[in-house]
Image (cartoon, rainbow, N blue to C red; front, top):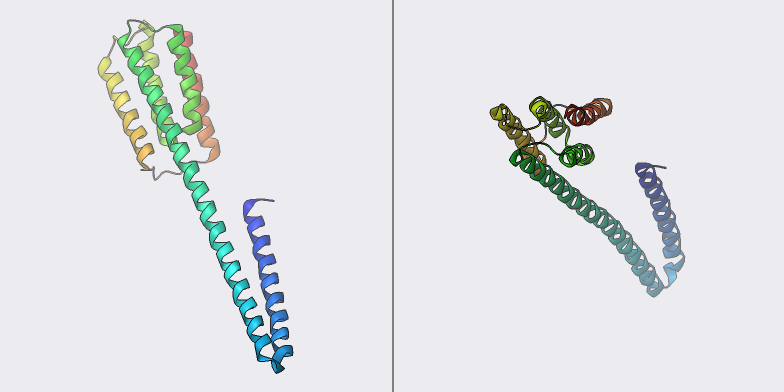
Length: 196
């Protein structure tokens, strides 16, 4: 049973409980018509139950919102950490004279980390970046057309920034399109390793 179905069931049960409780208390109120003090007690019980029910609903919603907020914060931190690792690796690779096997393997694993946290726009731009790196890796260094590398890195950085601050693309991707982009990035980063 999914989350929405559970909420509907809980709402239905709550409604049945409230209606049956109201009918019972209304009956008790009519029965105690001859003793006003008892009527006041029934009214107090009815008011208390209504207050408890409303408070429970509000606390439940507040808890759900707080949990979602914490999850979003942790996910944003994971994204930022992954993007930092990627940029640190790229900086390290650009400062070296040649690509080491460890750097290429690390780049390949970073591709998989990106597949977990990155937006589709970042994955697309990363794919373009991998193409540039693949071309430049033929001589095992970034010494070739560095302006191409910097342009690709700049475009990737812009997409990373947009992803972190919440500016999303107006293009909507299906799950199969996202899967193809991820698989393509994975293959391209392994091609860099194979070329070198």
